[in-house]
Amino acid sequence: MAAQTDFYDILGVSRTASPEEVKKAYRRLARKFHPDVNREKGAEEKFKEISAAFEVLGDPAKRKLYDEFGPEALRQGFNAEAARQYRRYGAPFGGGAETGGKSTGFGGFGGGGFDFSDLLNDLFRQSQRDERVRRAAGADVEAELELSLEDAANGAERQLDIRRPAECPSCHGSGTAPGSRPRTCSQCKGSGRVRLKGPMPLNMPCDKCRGSGVLEGPPCPTCAGSGEIVRPAPVLITIPPGQQEGSRIRLAGLGGPGVAGGPPGDLYLTVHLLPHRLFRRDGQDLTLDLPLSVREAMEGTEVEVPTLGGQVRLKVPAETQSGRKLRLRGRGMPSRSGAAGDLFVVAQVRVPRGTDRARDAAERLESEYQGDLRASLRG
Image (tube, rainbow, N blue to C red):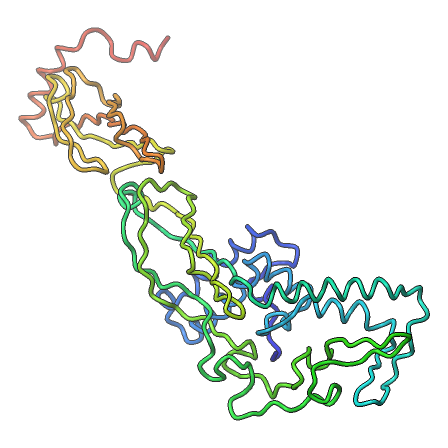
């Protein structure tokens, strides 16, 4: 893989950063460099770089491989178990192999307390694991979804541009530069296997070509040798009603592509509720301010008020004071189970503008107050 900036440096986080710190750093940078917001030259490329870094560091499995093996682990077809095997058994043998009948210097199985039976057992388990991982499910993908209160409560359909891995159009998934040709591995002579010399000859995957028998050409400049690019794909999704802040929606099969014909992973959307121009939210309960005239507050009235499900009639009792809460049961935010919170309507008595007629009316009204309005403030 071509040299690249460290993903931790791209997101500006330490290698010990928690998943939440990684996500916060990505969201901050994505908002800053998103092409819809930032029109400066280079912003789009920076956004792609940030997205590529988060695709790895935001996925626990990919991050673990990246931390262990570096960018090499992101190459198509990378075999982590084989890489660990090479690390574990490379040193005791002295770095040699027997190919084409000629020994390249493995010095036998003695020394260093090496246990040959452990090697056979581990290789057997490795073979079993290789069979299982040949056809593997794709990685799950995490994304965030902002919803209005109406869409969260009632459900909706949305078309989203989901950034998903796809085959590189330049190298068609090979990871090598267009026009370059792979060459036969000089160590295993194209067989993909090397023979370890010792009391019992043993064949192992070639560590130079990783068992493929060929050495790749220069990495593809478009995908940096990974064989994949991340591109937006339009997807129409149905959002079930009853979403809450932090709810997770699972969309089966919309994650990363499978390996060797395996099923794709899933897409998980984390819901964030947008502020509303009328309603204030407290869990499943909503609050709405209701302006009232002085006469309506004194005499009582019946008015229409908005809810997430449409307009409803509300009876305002006589002598309603400003700040009084009137409850509409079950008119708050519904949950996935169907139970809904309440809508609290808060009376807000409004006085008219200070015209001469209004002042005359206020003076006549003043005589109707009983006692000192602020007596309670003086204890």
